[in-house]
Image 1: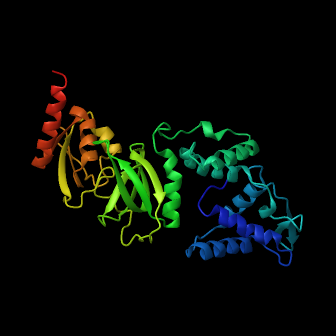
Image 2 (image 1 turned 90 degrees about the horizontal axis):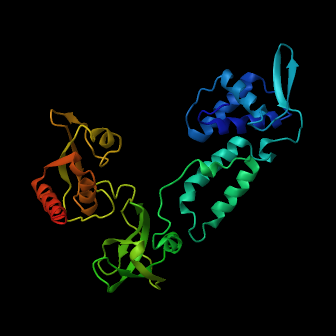
Image 3 (image 1 turned 90 degrees about the vertical axis):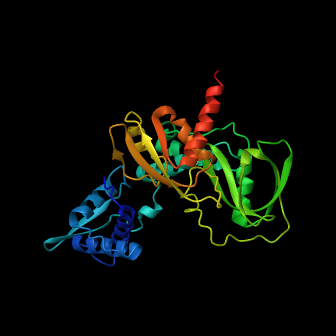
Amino acid sequence: MSTNKHAQIRYIALDKCFSNFGRKYFIEDLVEACNVAIYEFTGKSEGVKKRQVYEDIKFMESSQGWHVELDRIKDMKKVFHRYVDRNYSINKSPLNQVEITQINEVLLTLSRFKGLPQFEWIDEISNRLQSISKQDIGKIIDFEQNQFLKGLELITPLFNAIYNHRALAINYTAFKGESSVLYQIHPYYLKQYNLRWFVFGLNEQSNQITNLALDRITHLTELAIKFKENKGIDFNEYFDDIVGVTINKTKPVEKITILVSDALWPYVKTKPIHGSQMPPNHTDTGVLIEINVIVNYELIAKLLSYGDGLTIISPESLVNELKIKVESMRNNYL
């Protein structure tokens, strides 16, 4: 089976050739048609060879493909290809097994939204595809999620508000107090971290970006005010300097030097503490690494989660903050 990139583009190009009864397509013509199609789609010359096209034809004729029926018609010393049925096209055929599997892979990724309002269609489509493919793909992969988390029902209205550019009035209760605070938010972005969902948007009152945990939102309604567009914030880069979701723009990015024990290092190596993690320096006492981040609550919690497997060397301010946390934890067990 052909599995390399641009395969679907080649199949469509070959399908057009086999459907064209006004021209004879020899193998050289099929190769050229594939290369032209890829170039038109990507702007790059793929350099498809005869062997690849023969493999593509074999796949299209197989049970994994479309079971296409081809005539191989001899013309002098060469052979050209076309469909047996003049009216046939793979675009008119049912989904083949590969296409079903590819779609199921997408649905499996979307399945993390299972149980959320207005996402029931994912289960419905998945069930239909599984009845066609005769394979229960949904049982071979699982995404970590907390289906009992409060606020999941808010994802859909928040998503719709972001998509439709609607400002919201949000009643919010912080963990530190029982009193509710009313925010006027122009929502821009939804993000999940540590199995919790957060909405990011412009705070109408402070004119600053605010993030609110969905499980602390008690009520939201649409506001009849003009939506303020997101100007200049790229959320693909917004979180680059932190661990988690809490950003204090008044705090600088700091270089954190960490000594990781030899026992813990394989885990930190394969799952870095932060994307800025620098190449290691192996020493007699462990492995020295550096990360460049803004210190926040999530970073401290993450560092503490490694227990005695790592030691913060610098900056001194972070060392002292962790000492206070560790001492407080120790006092809990006295």
